[in-house]
Length: 450
Image 1 (cartoon, rainbow, N blue to C red):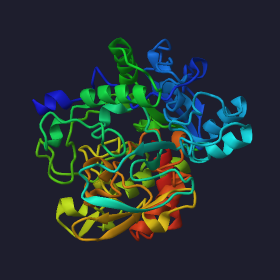
Image 2: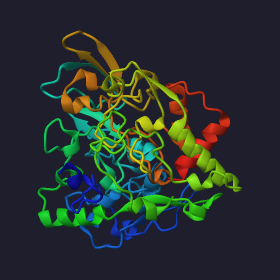
Image 3: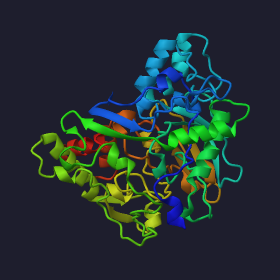
Image 4: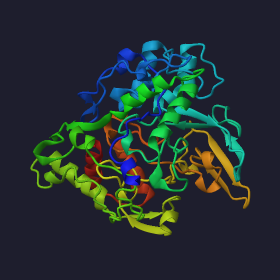
């Protein structure tokens, strides 16, 4: 029964939408949308009358404000800045309930609005505000907030909107998993994506769009719209069509990729019992001997992603799941879903993105103390811990689906990697991988082709 409910597609998908937009803009297809290395495309976006493009609340927003087709179904700093310039910062995207650096902030002039929405403009970040859980086993003991906004009752967390595409591969909802639902508590294979997405849509409508209520008919139509969307890179400026010469890049293969919860799981949780295969990507095998330099580079990057040894240490949520202080892994140890690259079961991990030594001056810094031990940690975002109330979960986040990466820079939940090269360098330094210059180039070429 588990496999039957988890296979392939869901007829009732709803994304974490509801931050809205002008329908005339969001109706635009991504067909031929340019990005840094070529073009990307999406399937299933023909219904331009969907409530996805309608204002369902009181502040003018619709799903499309933060889930824009030609920005990878999220938003990018360039797209946000263009909208700010075109409207002097008055578009519905720019609302103080979550778009500004603080909810109580001056927006009376263009200059004031530029400052108030700086995190949104420069990194595509939305402010998520929530209190420290009442049952938390930790206490917030210090706040260093450049916007003088945050407190234990109102922790300000700046995060990228996740893409509202390729949703059928999700095993976790939201960066911190707060909308995830399971039919059987503790059994990750019973993840109920439709139920979680439905609730997420309601919460987003009521919160981001500041609605006074929701209509199930609107929610169902949004569900229908988003359930059809797949997004992928389709051409590369050097390699040409990404399904050329036997390669399996582009949209046709992606739309037909089989998936179930636990597929290719490295922790032995594949319900079929099939062993983990580190070669999670085989899209570009046909280019192994290609005479085209870029095609060859993309293939080499794929194999680096699949097989380059990484000594994984100090990753909360992963090393302890394996029961090992050191894991001899690869990129696909975490990005295990075949041809897609997210984790096929819900897995929140801390790879150090919110550590104090990575803090930038525009980010708040929080000091939390574990009640039982007095241990303290400083972080720019406690992540999953704000949902579970567990000190051990501070800094844990889900990983994002990798298809369609080129359209949606910057990367990571906090936009800390401006480019894919920056993201690769983060991992290179964090795990001491010692990529050569050519390996970094090839890996970026592969990631750009997804």
